[in-house]
Length: 200
Image (cartoon, rainbow, N blue to C red):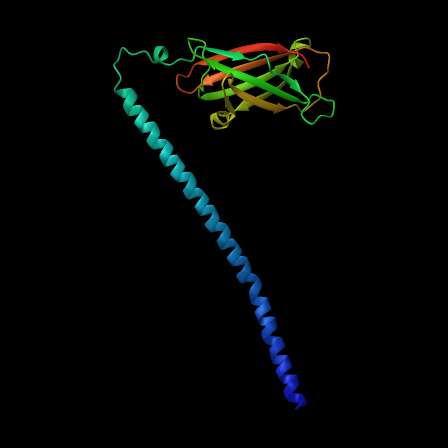
């Protein structure tokens, strides 16, 4: 009986070893397949979004091409001015006594001075004009249109883009700074600029 038992145990161990050796490649292949399927799914989703965007742009072009030749788009579209609201400034984000966060309240205005949600790209710059010219620009940030549209705040008395940026370095508490905003309007291609001074 003992030789038979030894043989059976040895055979079982051989099968287990074979299964274990074959499991790793299969598991790896399955993992790679799942990863590839996920990548394909992500690409298909992006493709559908691009198709939808392309269709929308084609429809816009069709509408614009049918406008009378004497229509001035700039006269129809209301973006006339850019304003940085007074609440803009440097803030202590984590309540540690250091102001390391810049918040800019940006208001695109039409020809009647009403704020509205204009679409475009924004560049914000923080300057210390008391420094030498080559060192005056402390930081700059770009906000893309898809990011900007999520930052619109609208209420009874509030209509603006609320832009928040972290400063890489601590600023001196007593200094006065200049904030410059550049707004590239994606409908007309117009670039509006404005600036204001802030104190920490």
